[in-house]
Length: 455
RNA sequence: GGCGACGUAGCCAAGGGGUCAAAGGCGAGGGUCUGCAAAAUCCUUAUUCGUGGGUUCAAAUCCCACCGUCGCCUCCA
Image 1 (cartoon, rainbow, N blue to C red):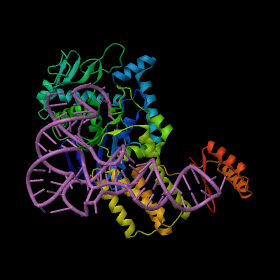
Image 2: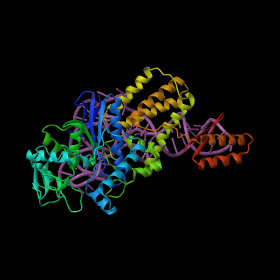
Image 3: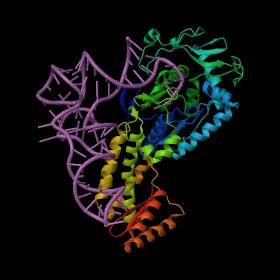
Image 4: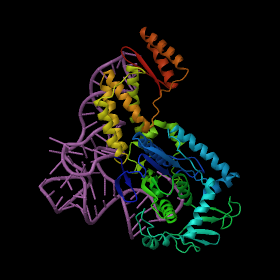
């Protein structure tokens, strides 16, 4: 039985989907006005991985991750480049998919974009207006927070507390500072759409409500995202959705912790971001996944070169074990399900069923890896490999050997070097070793053979 | 000011009333392997869980206070 920490209740709860065997899940995706950074990658990796775990556990998952392709920042960035917002958004959607692909993130079932849902957004806002949850003011439409009685339930705060807070900006045209924009009147030079309220564009929070209800229905199982979205983004989404539909919108809210740099949140506004593209180039996809998954998704984590090197080394231990197994037993090996496999599988499921405890899962991975390194039993090795491959369905590492068509040339050089070693021409042998190392080939000598690999 | 999370070995990080003298990783020290290396691998590495009280037969785990760190309350993953 899978259990999930639900932000709405603040408790770890048994996961029971609305429809047995099926899970509907929505994850807030990026606003596409530049390249994603490591902080953005966390929910993308973690929740994709969790979705795959749900599939591993037998659920059929409909997974939606949106792209916000219209907002102030996109407009600003497009204006700076003197191109259309569409062109800019298209570009960064494409860049997102490049990073996601390299990171081993599987595409979602649907990747909706805000601007493809403007008609639905207008209809949604009209519904809210008819039901008395929205009001029109100077070309804008606002959500009336006072009309929605459980406002604040998700973020566990009372509207009265927030009203007394000092940091809420006063906007003259709103009835209450907490009210938020559903539809924004167009300003000159901005992309806009026709609507019952005049030319304008969707507000900040409406898109997720609309796209999720269109693609997943008025109620669905899991909504996920970074914990910085809890308020106001998710609180507002929830308010407008439940106000319109008159029923519970989302059953389980999952929120990941922030990534920080030197004890400060990594964010575009602080300017301490590290691009995923750059992280992939420097540390590689496997190390980055290791980094993101080896800590519990709800905890804040620190990003630094030390942490990344540590993750790289840790992943290396798993890769080495896989190498050893492949060397010793070759490609194929018939295996039979037995107590050993059942027991390990049970332990893995127990760990991950508990609020997707990936650190615990890695503890098991390293335990079984040690098992593999200590044994010569071919049957045992084959079973361990089978388990690792099975679990890789949700871990998402790239175990493929970096094989290229110049491998044959490397083999020749390794042989020449060994010939040199045989005649004790160590100067020649060391030179070849050094040159190969410069080209990214690492050599290890042992008593009966020389093993090499691409770094 | 309000709300919330967290504080476990040199570092990272699970555990969250007894089976914990606390998983796993990184690092470090020692051994094996090697012509020498590198890499790999093996072994070792917390009587103790921020501090002080309390509850309990029993606490890292529950309660209270305090100290410290972070997040949200504004766009943010």
